[in-house]
Image (tube, rainbow, N blue to C red; front, side, top):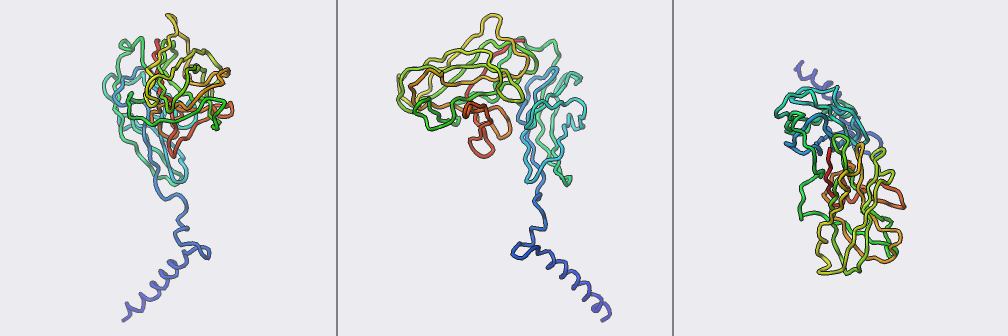
Length: 308
């Protein structure tokens, strides 16, 4: 009986604490838990798995939390690397200085922490470190495998367009200074359209966005065949010496200012993920990150060949 009398005050205290968590009138008690309910999630977008790495590697992440991310750490072969990662632009993009790694396979992971210390660990990305002697003299830069199964983003050439979008650009991130040798592009017809031209432009990259124009070439299209067919791959060459680029650069597809006729075209995208920063749209004459859907931005189907 004595034990039972002692339990009653304890039960009253527990009930008081439980019902005291209701919060303000009309607000469920769960509001007391705050906005940060789950740990972050982390995913390595670049580099692509099992690619050879040499002296440095461009690393790009997708990190999401229901409140905010307080810290991001990198692990190489299970050990935290606090020294060799250098931020270069916002949106979780880094340069990894990996020259000191031994040759062979290594596993790169990312740990993202929220404000209360919970951690989300990415899957391991297997990369192959090779000797600097094996570094290629020429490389093809593309972010995803070329495939026909891609989303298509429609846009119109002026002056009949109701859209404020007048071009698309995709960012390329070579591991070191290079020379641009060739650019490949592909577009798709959506309705019947007349012959015309597009500009293929190369821009320097400043703060992660297209900046000063380096080169402009013409893409010519014609209204032959099924409107839903792809235009064949267009290739532009930049000569024997190439176009010297000191680092990241953008390649854009835009309508020429003198082109007053036009119809609906489509740019084939690579389904890039939110925060990867690759895709930019020219809106009201300003280059801006373009969000085609939640957690996505859309990139033109463009890839380039560079030499070192």
